[in-house]
Image 1: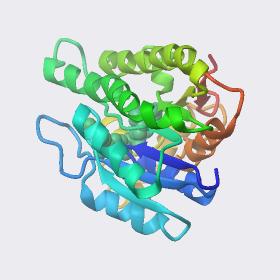
Image 2: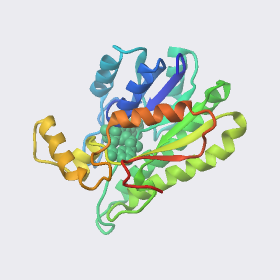
Image 3: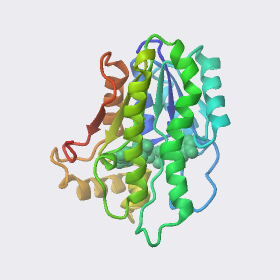
Image 4: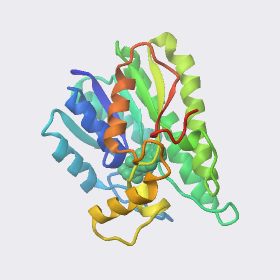
Length: 267
Ligand code: NAD
């Protein structure tokens, strides 16, 4: 990883921050890209803003080279600007991590068209737009890799999750198609499928808790989730960092969708 340049979308917090930490500690030069202003609209939990990006850079710069840029992955011009900012900071781009993602859930009868469109705009079209913007730089790299953060929700459907599961099945299909298409250019494309990680998606939307203190929130989450997982604990952002590091460096691996889920999903 030493001196390779990585761009991580949705890198301001959560799993993206965990991947940034693993990459920086391994010697990569990392740009974390995320929304720099609060997202507007009908949203059931807060997405990141500039203060989250600042916090990631502040914390991780203790370990190595990292900087931040704003991106909205649903906007082609914004994706191009994030790639340009990466090249201007570090001179190229070797690894793209399409991690930005959103969740909305609920019965289909009550699910709004705008929520459906928002989920697909970020989780699937975002991969398309970011990859398209990054490709000219990735083609110049001798060690190019794309890692799409899909989900175990992309392996099996769940009630009240049609939009999210649909968008993550799509992410795996996009991964396999691009792996086949870009292999000739020496660009590996893999998906990482996290299991259950106690980020905003779970703590503020899927399994909200009344606890106010982060430590108590984490303890309640762990107690609720642990019995459902064969290995007996929820996954962490650090688990995802370790797996992303593997996919970034495994020279003959492309087109896989790697579960990091403690055995909840085995296919
Ligand atoms: P999170 O909400 O903490 O992080 C998601 C990040 O994406 C946020 O920082 C958010 O601001 C950013 N984002 C959202 N819309 C964006 C946009 N249009 N442009 C740029 N950035 C945008 O949640 P997380 O759990 O860290 O999620 C990271 C990825 O992991 C997502 O793709 C998610 O679907 C996936 N995932 C999470 C879990 C889990 O259990 N938490 C499980 C499986 C997959």
